[in-house]
Length: 96
Image 1 (spheres, rainbow, N blue to C red):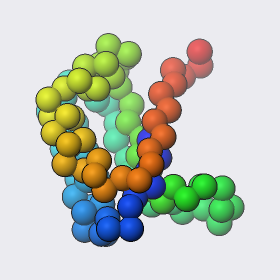
Image 2: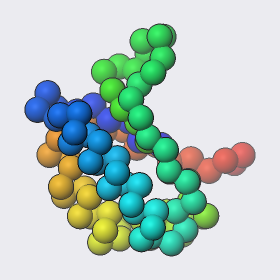
Image 3: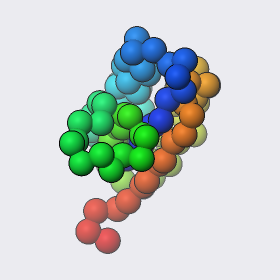
Image 4: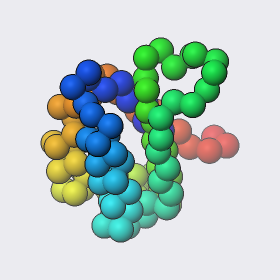
């Protein structure tokens, strides 16, 4: 799971393009099983300024590791990281 705090210069359109580009990676990178993304939607207010997040699941740790260094993923990072002020990436293995 990844939490994002965007810079003020990030537009709604650019954020939408980022999430579409991440969705497209599912077509390109084997072993990426699930992807969902969206804006913070809780009334609790515990988001600490992170306005959006996304969740990806992978077939296994090897598939995740392939994704991390895949050239298509690197292109998405190169294009969109300049819009990001802060990011938290939290990988976990279910029921470990």
